[in-house]
Length: 284
Ligand code: SF4
Image (tube, rainbow, N blue to C red; front, side, top):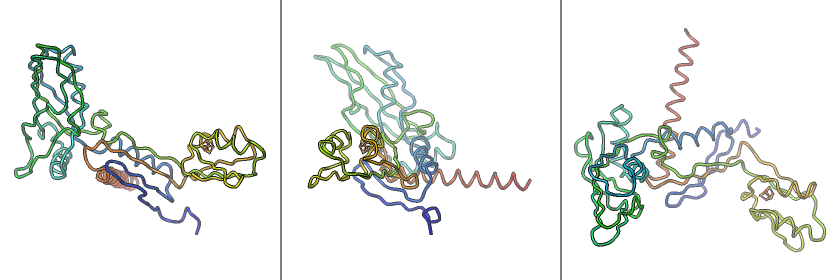
């Protein structure tokens, strides 16, 4: 059986905090790219979407202040997330909201207004009994610096949305993949050339062991081909398009495993819908 006939395989290689690395084998680049795009733009998250400013004595225009606030990532508890997501998927985005307030004044000395100054007020439109758990992922994200005597008072309303509408709803900072590199030494280099090849590689893929050039960190190769261009006939660099190395770094708004789950679920629903429309069209 050749590779194309085998089913897809997924192996998680590393998972820590908000970071995950996994490999996909026996898949097409189109599939991997669909997963990447779904992670970036199809996973609903919570972000500030409306900012009502009652007082703004800072140096920033209201619009800039509102924009900065909207980019503060919000960590949402599991139960809260499910309730908000259900509401969003029912088309009730503007009804299911979470309200925060912010009131800071610089009296004696200048004050940096931080995400930690946002105060949670409550959630609206969600089923009764859902215990809301929403907070900025960090308390030390700077918003604006107030000079003595300056003050801001505002309300910020968070709503669900997806990355395809605005980057503030994107749940990750990185969702990227590369083909698995295949690097080999075709011919042992002579003289200083081995040292030069090892030095020229920006990813330190090669090592010299017992006076021989060896490939020691193949997966680190970025496929830049610097070694092939500078030393033709000595090194060969290729890649396997059906073997993909994926890495995703979440912002901490929901667990990174959940982000991938929701992305795959959304992709699955879309494909099912596409197939049913296709079947209907064929049988018309
Ligand atoms: S292609 Fe670039 S990263 Fe890969 S081994 Fe060659 S020099 Fe190093």
